[in-house]
Length: 329
Ligand code: PMV
Image 1 (cartoon, rainbow, N blue to C red):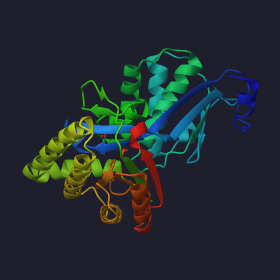
Image 2 (cartoon, helix red, strand yellow):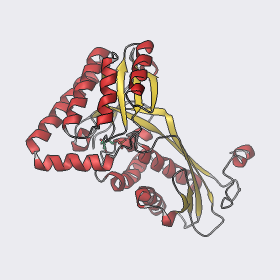
Image 3 (cartoon, rainbow, N blue to C red):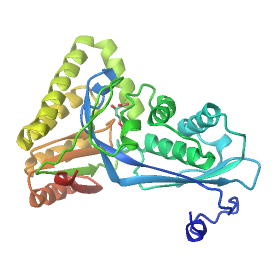
């Protein structure tokens, strides 16, 4: 850390400009296939989305209380609102697990990951905080310890979590992921473009996960069949990626969306955006992440198609779109 970096830090009175500093970062993710089903042990395919990322800086606090500053909350950690309880838990677990001395710290969070859009914002912030604490106290934090600690926070955020968000915010490769299994990294390298479209509607992962669980209790046969179908599509989707068959992958994305819709986790605006992508020539499109709002993805064969599809998705209601060249992923 050089003087320039230190002087670039937040100038809140609470900070103490000593070279004692901890830094941590993490990024967002896109689930290509398998969300929700992954909570029940079905594999999912996901990729990092590094355009959206978070960084955390920690310095000693000038007051005797630990404080956090972010776009969504600024104040003592002890008074953080309930929806940030996962971050509090991660901080406690980091300090307890590594037997770190009680010390009032100042946490400064900078993130451009939209919250509640199925992009894994809560897990990414937790990962960045855990890494910053490890850096501040100079402790070795293994990937395994990181996942374990952050997942405990995620359980508070989502109730039941597959662990996929935590993994993806701290990993650099696309992966085939199955709960309790070693993730399988792979490279996409497809002649295709992925459009990510933000519906502008806050997704509700916790509510969506709970509603699928309730549906499973009420209509077990129906939900199990949907989960089995999604599992088949995910496995075929992975094969299509390995075979570089983008047409097949697109079809499977669309089939996957059909079943997410059946499980009740889509949203009329998301459906409209997805339909617009299909009509504009997408090879396939679906919601991504927890749903009930949040984001949709669409697959396009060429850059020009991708632009037209992104435009169509915006006309249908998307507030923001991103285009990713999958040849470089
Ligand atoms: O909405 P997100 O980005 O938190 O994604 C949630 C993915 C789910 O499969 C719905 C839940 C999980 O824990 O895997």
